Length: 330
Image (cartoon, rainbow, N blue to C red; front, side):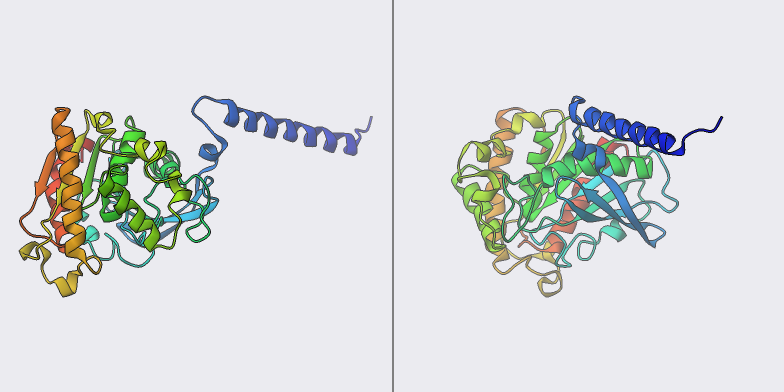
């Protein structure tokens, strides 16, 4: 008796279709799991050296591939903690980054940790925007760093699951906010020379100035400035969510000094770096005062010098590392 090949193909087709539908329903309905989370994946790895990879990750929420430098010990041993370091205002897309300017490769050489350096998010405040922006595009960076990227890094590098997050300049405040939005994921956070506030007058000005500098419309981010979403993303207002974390805050004085090294070589960060650092100091002081009022332990380093240079940022990375390393077992 001969089987009907057409019937067999139809049976396979419908069985495959049914499986696809069931998987989609599970991804949609399972608590805490969305189709975007399920689909985030590594689409390419370029080995730059024995201790540096360039990992390309597809972000379903942004519908694009995001590149990330990953620093790791030679041989990529398993069971290590991870330190995620967000870029500055240019999103490292401008070639200005911890990788290129901040001495990250040298600093972490020989250390037992995976360091993840995302590339992207210029002038975005590294948050989820309400709507795509005509200039800055589709920004869903909170989703990317809190839900999409860590699982694929954990799987690819067989990490311990222990994580810390840092931000510098533009991303210093967002790093605190990101930890507040997903406190169970992070053990430590460092904010170097930024503005943690979002809804107070200084925070409103700082956030708006950065987005506007990149040509974006800040209303596309969290709606009208000062509205409910701005308050929900204000790291100072929501500081109680940082309780139990290792917290490092830092800012310079806005006066050039030894910590900056050669200002010509390290750059003033941007033109007006002295003004920017004074703003960062005021913002960071507000954050420290808020944590003190809540009796949340933290370390606040206020230097007598520093004008938004990589010399300053490198010094604070070195100062913060022992605290971060203890938190993630590095």
